[in-house]
Amino acid sequence: MPIQNRQKKLVSTLQTVKPSTSSSKSNQDVAEKISETLITLGCKSLPSTYLLHLLNPEVIQLVLSNPLLRTKSYLDFFNFLQWKGSTSPYQHDISAYLTLIYRLFKDRRFALAKHLLNSVVINEDIKCTATVTASLLENVCDGSWIRAKLVDMLFRVYSDNRKFGEALETFEYMKNNGFKIDERSCIIYLLALKRSNQVKSAFRFLRKMLEAGVEVSVRSMTIVVDGLCKIGEIETAKGLMDEMAGRGIKPNVATYNCLMGTYLKQGAFEEATKVRNLMEQKGVAYNILTYTILIDRFSSCGKVGEAERLFQEMHQKGIIADIYVYTALINGHCRAGDMKRAFILFDELTERGLSPNAHTYGSIINGLCKVGNLEAAQMLVDEMQSKGINVNEVIFNSLMNGYCREGLVDEALKLQVVMEKKGLKLDVFTYNTIASGLCKAKRTNEAKRLLITMEERDVTPNKLSFTTLIDAYCKEGDLLGAKRVFHEMEKKGVKPNAATYNALIYGYCRKGNLKEAYKLRDEMEMNGIAADIYTYTTLIHGNCMVRKVDEAWELFHEMPKRGLQHNAVTYTAIISGFSKEGRSDEAFRLYDEMIEAGLKPDDTVYSSLVGSLHTVKP
DNA sequence: GTAGGGTTAG
Image 1 (tube, protein in one colour):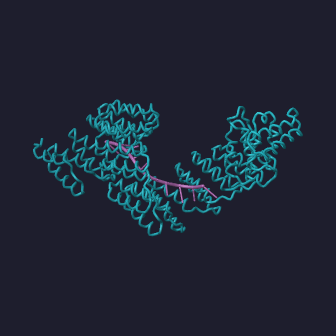
Image 2 (cartoon, rainbow, N blue to C red; image 1 turned 90 degrees about the vertical axis):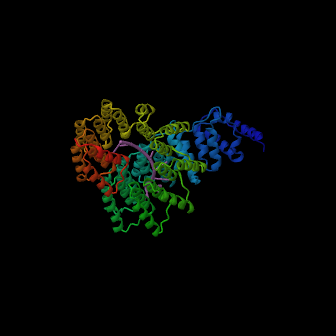
Image 3 (cartoon, rainbow, N blue to C red; image 1 turned 135 degrees about the horizontal axis):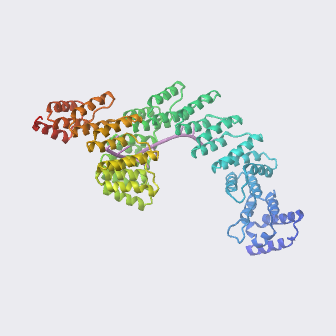
């Protein structure tokens, strides 16, 4: 039957119903007629003009509740009514939605039911409180077993939408009405909380789960343990694990991975080893993630040999490395400057059918930038682009850093323009990298300008930005400016570190103001920041400059006592100090000592040693 | 529906 004829028929059908009366009987008649039309003719034939003034919520409710209607028909009817293209789209009330959701669920169309429930909770025009929604849901379910499923679905939907208050209210509703609460739904809520940085709420909720009689497993516990570890509450996490053990919930490999990973990130190797021992003791085998974390952390802190050993061990145990493992190991070698091994692994993973991704390329490109091979880095950038992998902010930052290290800060500035053109956001890394590149190129004014303006572009300067800025002022000899920035950073609650103090100490040394430099050294130590190799080297150099080589010598002696090893720069400073004073015996003795320590002297050492031979003792 | 990867300063 052609569409037009169908419509004519429907119109005539509808006209037989008196629209003026609003009694239930009449509503029922209308509903029945509409249902009949829908069953026999389908939804496409509904002419909106006539229907809209015959309809009211009760009629709609009746149509939607008609068991004779097939799912497709009432769904079409529902959508037809609120079709946005019509002149007056109809706004269903919440009961209409919930009725439809119930029917969809009954017809096992779960995804659609959930989708609609989602629109109920986010639609400002129809949404009710969680308790009201839950009880309305129960109403439309008419005592069916489905009501428990639907209230559970409501809990999940609230969680998915980060509506934590409503989700909790639904949870309480289920608890108070004797529903059995599924742990898997609670996990969705826990994860949503954790992802919104509401770890403490997740922690409290876990307790609520236990109180409500939910069968809590190690999964829920691990989510909370992980969250607590991530916010640095590792002791709370351990306390929780003990408490749960008392309830028979034992940690598994995932739980241990969280704990161990956190310790390793903090550099607490002994604690991490304790976790590993505990795993062994309890017979909990490592999985691929355990190995990834271990390989990644050892790689990051320069213990790439240990990372390689774990990589072998993993293979012996029959665990096949994935792209994460390869990337972690490659990164370790790149950081150590061993590009040869990095490329061997890169080829190996490709041969094994794995595809390098942006992180893998990022590691290799960064490694190449560090060793100054910018052409090769550029080639890899081209390669990844040809594979359709986007060059992201991190890779741009790596490249900029590479150029800055080579003194090619203008190339870095060109990349900045490219980044902006691509719509990539310059982040704190970008600004800090370029600023320090500018400082190194003695373009301190540009560096200062960049760091001062970054805030205007919504990038919050961090410790490093302030330190670089202080460094720029110090290099210009503007100690007042440097001090001003130092105080400004304190005021903003950004804590200085050793590098910050060292920049200032350098500034004072450069002016020959050793008194102030020493004062700063004492101040940093009082604030719990240990003087490091840079602090000492700067002070040694500063003393030598004002011909106080004995003071320098004293500092040089102090270093090993404090666990600081001399490096080539320290030796260079002290050797040239003695040389300048014409104390060539001491200078040569230190030179031999330096060679013996396996340190490579640079040109400065030679020239100062040669120079010392011509200097007449005062 | 547990847990994982690449970038910055002296």
